[in-house]
Length: 251
Image (cartoon, rainbow, N blue to C red; front, side, top):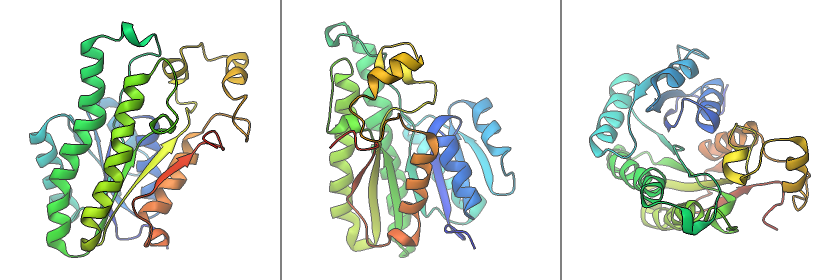
């Protein structure tokens, strides 16, 4: 028996990184997963992990019509949509804030904030109508509450998600819809340089983790394990939580 047997999940950004890991982990725990990504090649690669439990759906999280199609597809293919994982995200490269362009700012907020807004709007009503509750898991960041120089507007976008998670949990709790966010530390997903502004070398990792009590950067399975727990009945009375998965970085 898997911890997510009988569940159906929508996972955005499922073609790489956390999204691919979450999709695979959910399938391994018994869930059916609609793997959503704008990158068809990456999404199809994720689905190969378990073609009986995973299906790919191409979509752009910044488009309301794509969200409507996504929720409709999940229900048509799997019969329902119990869990929504808002994982798709983007950022500009760490740099002086006054050099961030308007286009970089706009893309960051369109994907990281508008994408979650549209996703919740498309998913929530069917969960209310089903009268069986559900779970929304938003992927935020330790930067939501411990912002640092160089990624000010990326961190602000994740701060918006941190706040919205609590608001959504309060509003939809009476419908037995739980809303949580996962706040990871930077991980070895190929984005170390993007987020830190440093080359990904052992020496630079040491510089970055000097104030991480557990002495390392994150790993994808740190995040996927937290998501499996939050999506499962083990977390049935947990909502409005922004869980830091950071080895103690935010202490």
